[in-house]
Picture 1 (cartoon, helix red, strand yellow):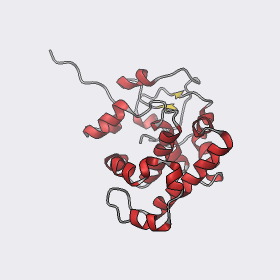
Picture 2: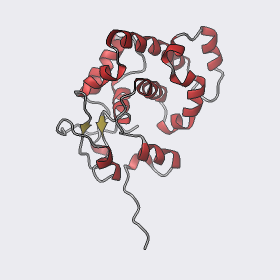
Picture 3: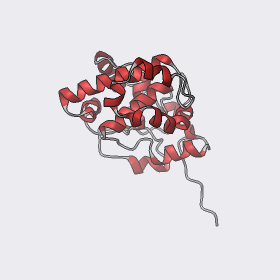
Length: 207
């Protein structure tokens, strides 16, 4: 007798790459500075596009963006940026590519001041993941108070492409928020002790 299909969040569809991302990465708490920086840059690159587009280009980004080494990106020359704008393996948007250099410099400043980009970011959720209990995609918001606070703080530090919607998608991706729907097989697997679930306004924030 065949095993019943696993229940997943509806947003991941059936694309094998998207399903693997949902099953293995999305919502898993990330505490590593460099991986958080990578996710933040990729979420910004997604602006105006579908996340699957960025997933398909992720390896190209890693190669083109010096494996997301902030120190190297911060030193990009204008000539390097011009070369990147000819690279079909990334999204060739000047503001986004130049924004990566700007964000790398802002990242390094935070690390110099605080010692940890991870600790600086995780403070917006009190250091532990928020566990929501949404039953459908329509119950998941596009942004929250925490995302708006993070966006404001990042912009103040000089980051770009960090609006509240991008910040909330980032928070979902790196496990600051568990927004798997409750009947998704991953909900319990990625859950960690944290603040009590709160009721949120409707909207879609999956990315």
